[in-house]
Image (cartoon, rainbow, N blue to C red; front, side, top):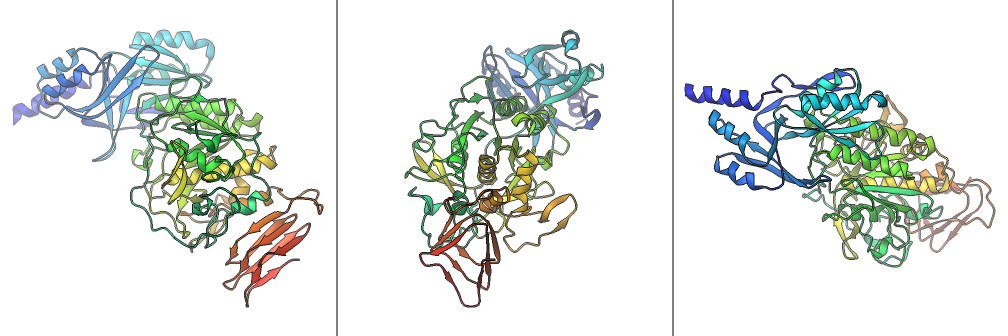
Length: 591
């Protein structure tokens, strides 16, 4: 036993050579501590996967593996468990295996979670004129300059070679004072995740559609028999969006062959993984499903998006766990706002990031800040994130910026979806359980997740900007938050730091209300004449006290029931037609 422990200690001393003391990284000028896993190590492999057999023959367990592409070639990576019974000779053999270019540490999260740090790291230069000096210093420390990160001003990527960890070199470069910020290449898991345990779905009698798309009656999130929906039909009486409003979808790609995107899919697109245009469509239909929720055309075919006439911009990435994923997503965010995106939908996150504690990507956060502050000519791009599917924790970077719009998921009965992450960073909720949308081959399918909820909010932001393009990011967010519906029987209370009405940590401000948000933003207002197109409300059952504001209204096949009142504040006219009923004990008020 004594020999075994001595062997294990010697093994670790060799593998950790060059970074034994680097159990931290710099973030916003402060050291943030991290803990290395005692057995797991990250291996970068060149050219082929031949070393995998050799590793296996040595009794090393391969936990994770992946493929990524650089400008030069395809490359491979693995995370291995070295165990505790390897001799120094075994470790020497590991290092001498062909095509292994780098061995580095893995961060220990908990008994089941870990995050690798790749051989890359990213730095933001404080003074651009000092870049050549920083490159020279990095080379002396064992790292090569890879290049600038596309569309991400001031940020550059380096690659460590040999024994010294990328983390150690990044820290040492920061300490020279020539570096504004560093960002170790934490290999976050941003891969799409769909909830596998489906919440009970409310199956009512589908009510009359307000569009001719044949599967619209199955889209409960747009219109629901019990009134738990985003009030899309009423909103479309004001606007269905405009092609001058661009909603970018940073995801696995949007299938351009789909009929549902025939009139509004932009020809301008970008693949964040390769850093080139155009976008590509990766094997997962996640991005295509998300795009349909936002902008599927109203064309008598399949479904309708909440904003069927906005322009969709595809910004693609596989969202697979690969080196440089944070930098690539940062590049995608920056490309989007620099190419005119008014809204950026991000239905991805690090799969329960609360477990990662203090791991943050400065390069990714820098891109989020740039979009929110510099997008739309300084008015600010609306950046929407899904809250995550690992309730109760929320995903990162949804938790990062209070300026993002962070969206959780509800069921068709109005309760929080069981998987929906919640907490202090949650802003609003939207339909996310049993959501029908577009998939490959001109088909549709149901999916569950906050990934499905976020695009409802992104589409609503697009609708608002279609009628009021000069609104600031903050104004758009405020309209969405302040008009949200208090659904689900939760206790909504006045909360410090939450100025837009009562709030609940599981529901945020509540379920987004597209019609109310548009009215609050000025939709239907302005000069109101009898010729102004009315807001048509068809087949809505009001079961709680509701107030509508706008210009002209036309009600069809609607009712006021369940001890409630409907107040319609119209600057023009209110037309009641086609079986509008008010049950005994209820009221319709038209001031």
